[in-house]
Length: 315
Image 1 (cartoon, rainbow, N blue to C red):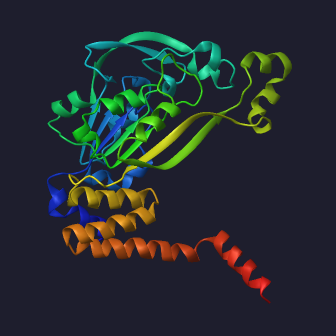
Image 2: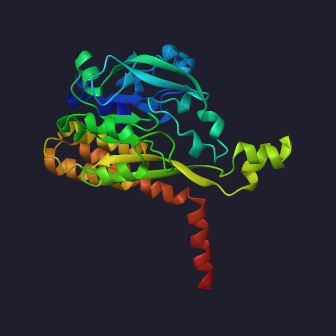
C-alpha cells in the first residue's frame, strides 16, 4: 500500500475526508489537488458559466459540489456582478477604469455585462452541505478575498490547514481587499506565509501602444518592457499551535506540506505528531519527508555545480 493510501485509510480520515473549497473557479480546479482528489470533497463556486464546463465533466473527486452562486461575506439573496471581457477578472466590485487603463492588460477588465446573481456565504454553503470544516481554502474573487476569509467563523477558520488568496497590488476594483490588507490581517492569525508569487503586467496603456507602435511591436511589447507588479498569489499554512487540531489535521497538514514542497515543515509536523499522538504512522511520514530532502540533493543540478565548483577551489 502506498503511503498516501495508508494515510487516507487511517480511522481519523475515513469518515472525515478533506474538504477543499475553491471560490472563483472560473477556469480550472487547482492542479495540486489532483493527487488527493479521489479522497476529497470539493466545493467549487463561480456564477460565470462561460468557463464552467470543465467542472461538469470533472469526476476525479470523492464528491464534487458545484455552486453557481456568488460568495459574499454577508447573507444576501442576490448581488450585482460585473462580467468582464476575461472571466478571470469578473467581480462583484466594479473595475476602476482610470487606473487599470494604465496597464497593458486593461482590456481584460472591460465590463461586458452587469447582472444580478444569487449569493451565499461560506458558512451558509457549509451548513447546506452538512459540513463543519474546511481543510484547503482557495479564493480568487477579484477584490473580496479577505472579507470572505474573515467571514468564516473563527472556530472553522483557525483549523484551516492551507489558505490561498489572490489580492491585487495596484488599485484594480472599487473598495477592494489588497495585498497590504491581507498581510496585515494574517499577521494576527495563526498562519505563516509559505509562498508569494507576484504576477505582472506592463505599465503602458493601450492608447499609447496604438498611437506609437505597429501591431507586430504591440504583440512583442511584453518582451521589451520591464514587468510591473499587479497582483499576488499567496499561500498560507496553519502554524499548528492550536490544541484543537487533532491527528486528522496533522496527517493532512503533512500531505499538504509535501504537495507544496514545504518539506521542512512536513518534518516538523511529523515530529510533533509523533510526540503528540504516539501513532507509528508518523515514523513513516518523518522518514519519507527526510528522505525526500536527502534524495533531492543528488538531483539538484545547481547544487551539484556549486559543490563541484567549491571542490575545485581546494585543488
